[in-house]
Image (tube, rainbow, N blue to C red; front, top):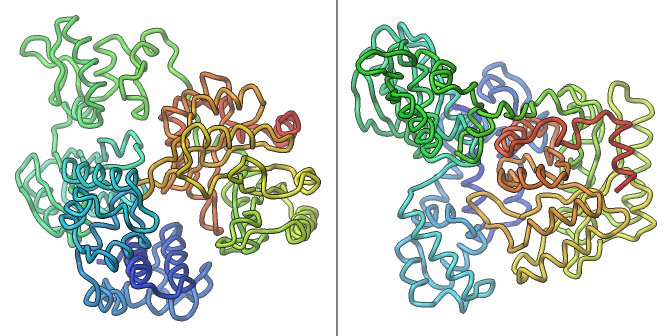
Length: 573
């Protein structure tokens, strides 16, 4: 069975992590991280490219050495480089890397300075107060690490939506080949498009449940079979993700899909509505006494309690039932509603594709306009632009815009918000740009009042348009910085600027709660890919899923506007 892109990317991610822990050359580390992002965002399987004999060095950021490693991973399922690093470093360090807030640099410090090589050793050290003496650690960091360890032990591992999606798609493809399978849907938090998932729930209808179960547990990427039966089977995949398969009869499929999609709170509310009508609702159907009166479709389940169908992304018992009763469910934004993208990077800073490659990829993705927003000078690790380099870059954008048809190109910047809230480039330079995206990439540990004041001051700048990834979080890696987002949202309304929903699956920032808060305050949200290569526009679908969870319709999203309306809105900012 062919190795999937997610598996290739996971190998490169692990190599990068272990190299960084070892203290290897940072450029080498970055090359592996970039390769992982490239492979993960490809529209085709690299295994197919290898089989077809295509030149892998044509992929962004992939040279001869990395191309050879891709072929090795596709052929063998692993890499000699990775296996050597695993033998060299303690195996328990991988568990440390999966804790929020502990990147490779901090894990390296813990290992080299304190000899910590396992989750249990880290727990003991944190409880003894030994972490706070390390550079980059303090009492608050120590407390957060201990809290993360306890949460991990309590809830188990979670996976980014994008990672789970790659494994889910491959498994569904495998199941479709089973004899007699009809409908297949991945339910649970995955279907509700939550940022992370703990496991996968797959439902299917089939004539022969035992045959489907045998096909399921025989999946080549199953590391462990936990159970096997005619209606329910459970496996653990090679990446540690648990998958439950339930084979249901057609008359119960809609009820099972509703039940296993959740959320639990939403399901309880719907069941209570059924009880008020003398109905019993469970995964087998809607019953009046012993007679099943609905359940073959989700629509029939909702109809039985007097509701229209509710989109899965809204099913969190946060007012969706009341809105459905009132006939006021929102028309949620769709990927095809997006007309443009207002945040991307090229080789001019830390991207991996040229201006023209990015523009052509955006046009192929159906976008009508694209803003180039390189990093500014203070972010040296990303080769940020100073005023002179930015002006030259703007000229190149304008020249390309004149000759490229089918898409409009905007000149912008992702400008650093400095510690005092000032912006990283002079006013006269920012005034020349079409869009200014402000971002925090440093001083994450400021107290809440100072962090909030810093961002509010930046938003007051006359050329400021959009606040990028407003909480600064990296899912499963870094907690949000401490900021009063409710105040930031209200200030954006007063100031007339906008907030980004960064669609990178490592961020998905704004979260759904603050998306809805922005909607209620009348603040437009820009769904942006933050693409760093020509493949990155695929991220937009994750941002749309998050926006839907936040009750956003097309009218609540900045970049659903035609270009001329967008320009007017930016000019008013």
